Image (cartoon, rainbow, N blue to C red; front, side, top):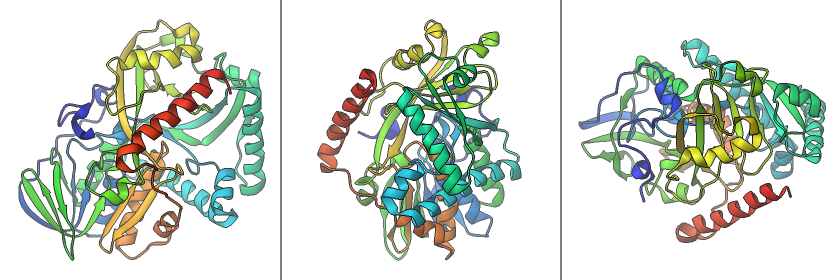
Length: 433
């Protein structure tokens, strides 16, 4: 099954609130005929657009091809949370790779966060960037763990996280589901599709060629790489795979380590004065459940809420009903709120929940598998890929050195095995284990 077309209309954004409020960006042309460039990038999301921008700014001839529109995939559908550090917290990373490498990962994560902020400012991207993400604990024990983590980060990294007890957290987020948490005011949230569209506009202005509605049908590696689409062909000295969950069968080496999964988001009707019943401050929230709930207020006063569980490549027929279940548990007083938009998206995870950034061949690079931390990681990955192609590879090499095992079961069994595991952890969430 081709995830590029299994849930979406070809060449069109999903019917999301993000698409309804995106930038006024004209379509880029379809690839026609033969083109010759220095670097070809497959995928017009955060990774591909960032790589194109950073390459074009150094005079590299670069072309981006996307089967749909720029920002069509996870880059334009996600929760819009620009988190600190990495997807895995520092205590996990210290055990996984050791203290020194964990510190390097923290520094890279912080550079990623700042890079996004700097690109937004430098290219005047109006994407409603706002400070603050709070992590919510669903039990007294998990709140203690969050507070211990805040102490660890202050002591070991000099990074300040505000600790909130149940009463303090309730004043911020009036939900009966949460017992307290931590608040990170250097993290941020934003309109992700507008960010992707702004990066595309900046890359094109810098000289990058961007082709939409250009499905790649074949890649032929070699001393030069040939990328064939339905209506054209690009020959390049270097190739970047920036496909994330939509890689499909283009490269089996990457696909063995990067698994596509689906997630779902709704936007309610504008809440007006009722917005204070959701959040007292304009920050984003993410909780500690395995099937995570994440939410924030939009700039027009809607609740943007992500959550729900669905296993299989097809989106559920009623996404709104799927997401309304966890939304009603977090905010029982909103159980009947009108939902104006509901959409799904395909992201990609790795076994270790850290990005898979690799050199597949001497002239072929890949970055994907951001595991829900892609707003910062993916934009930075594009910059690191561009640097690696230009001979500056410290950041690229640090990520490439991370362990990224294959999913068990191979192509035939990995998805059923993941489904079983996800179902078990979702059951643990429901039982409060």
